[in-house]
Image (cartoon, rainbow, N blue to C red; front, side, top):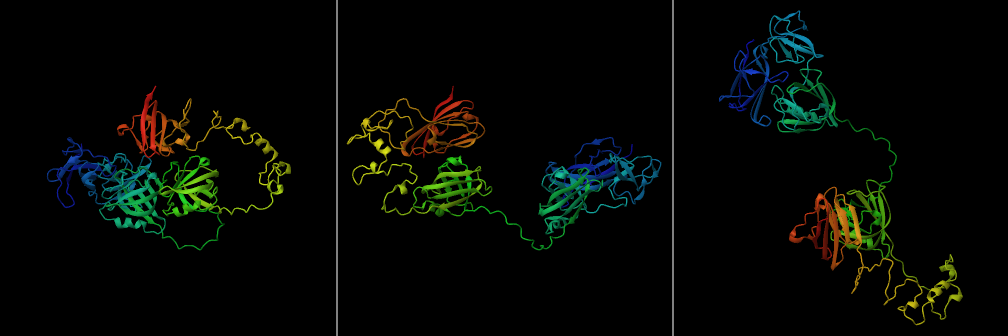
Length: 628
């Protein structure tokens, strides 16, 4: 068995102070394998790595001769508090300094005897490698690139040592770590282990020899062109292992290292940890002068009139929609009857004074036309007429709308153009003079006998009725009141003081129904169905019994359109699977003890809500949980 060489290392910090109890790792410089180390020259007593320095910072081991990478650190190996790395540390005949000169020879042959320093080429695994003989009388000992640790006879030489074309550039060792951090002295790393997917590189400020190359790296972004230059990374061990990137953007100082934005162009081979690469950068020339102005292109299509720009909100509650936003009171655009517009436009300008002019027309039924158009997709729009007064909602304006036409889907947060065209004022009332003629007032002879003389009653101030109208009125007795059923000929007319059977819905317009006895009555049900998460509004104009199912995700309820303050208003919510997801109630709801009930995950809960102040405060009650 060959004798082992001695490898003696003293660990000191940058100030020259020895570092006792430091961890030391010894690996082969070529190949990166952990080196077997021994406490004796014969190589019989193995030691376990990492080793530990003594009180004077020394560690001494015996190894097979060669070139080594020595790493010393304190603390955790992945995030050390102190770290120092020595590269190409020589030991024995395989050391870096034993060979005085190199003599290129032909390809290795088992019939040739080689001397110390002879360089040969040898094909191993399809790739050609260069080896240097470490002994005289070196006969029939085949070099092996797959086992670079076996350096008794041969040492694997990085490409270019034979005197062939060398690899140019700054030398740095590759690190397989991908995090954005200082890769270590004389080292570089990429942000992805797959070379073709790398988009950023991290290069230490020092090259392998310890020289500062930060100023050179900083010059990589000097070109005024978008692509700053081409970066070539080539292995000094296997020339076929390389990567080419373009560099764009600014070089960033990462404190002790530089960051470069990269775009992969081409690459080949496997990047192995610890292998030294030549880093070459070819800058792009500066951006040239601006060329002559080209001919004018064809005119583009007309753009959308910007109007007032506000973002659409899918929320339908009567409230401030938020800065620079608007909302409508119904998610179905054709069913909208009111819009809520913030006092600010999308850029933060105050447009409240403009919104207030939307009701300036004295035309009572039609104040103007409002067009809402998506600025991203011109095919998405809606047209409304504005009726009634514009109301100040504190921070926003409320506008009564009547749908005219619309198209496309209104998407949340999309910016719309609000364009309003005012209707002219109501004209002056006519004088009312002149003759009433059939040609003027009934040119189509819709009621052909209206103007017949025979249809006039006696007296010069009586109304003019057609024969049909006279027939309808003939059933009313002279001097009789309409409380007498015989005085009204039309079937189904309602008489005062007489029991009525109504076959159609009656609208009391929020007026009081006083001293009524109710028998066999029902309440309208608002069947929401599957809620689907998000915000779910309970609109009391749609019914006072509400049903719904909580299913996919967090559901936030809102309540809208209760009766006015000082009037009691209540509704019942029948909720299925309420406990299967998170349910948020309006902040205006007060619960017994201040805590909402725990809802059933798979079942039905019945809850009741009541307010007497127009919804400022709601009182919530669990009428029945987990109904079975």
